[in-house]
Length: 333
Image (tube, rainbow, N blue to C red; front, side):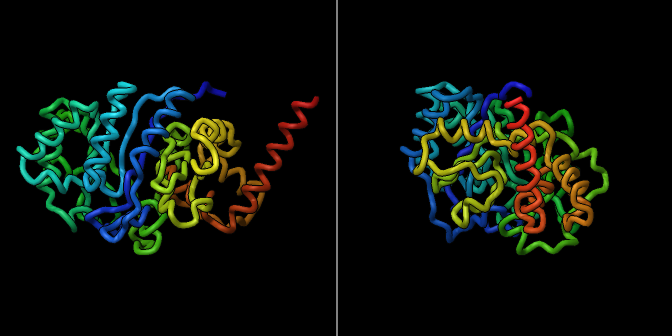
């Protein structure tokens, strides 16, 4: 067992978003009102720092810039009390000009912002100008921030990793911007609104046959107070216990207790060490004819089958029981 890795805390500040993208795993949109409180978020961060090793703190949504006071007050708290580097994910709707983008990011850099992640794909481009994304990216580079562009791709999508540098006016691979390409995750709105033939699946398991680098290292807090062991859980307001990698709620236990539960959970440990594809392969070996998909796009895509496929869940529970009982027998000689 490898030593625990430092935590990169992920706080979902709100479900509110001025965009309503078809691929959104959390069903965010203008009609959503659920928003976290400053006290709850700050208390969670304080408790995590006291209980474990924290490397970074990140903010997402929804759209964090729709709750600007919460964002800046929380970043100020982290900067003043813990001095941790901070990052955020945004659709860049606020970057209406180069000057506005530079001014807003400069204010946040003074509060500890080091990483800016901006969304650029066909889904987001249906709602806002790509020029705003360009303004945010360029301002981030000018300020010396670590800039990443996330691109969600489908078979029918209009923007991919190859097109991103041209759209953003970047010189190419030496621009200092990391462009990451993902497929939609079959959770939330993506599961309901995207047709099967829009998902890009692959037989090349080498691209996702590995340990998960996010589970247990990116604990994510939803506005409801629900804590998840990774950042791809979906809409936590609707059946949180059924979401991917649900750990518990801060109403029922303190952050330190939840973190210890996350670190010791058998399935989460296996996913962190071996990855979801290894678990699924073992299930298929044990249960010939198991009704699970054979083709996936990412490690997260495999996890969806493990956690949400009703034909897989009972067999997964039985597998974990076997592992747990074997471990107990070994411990007792």
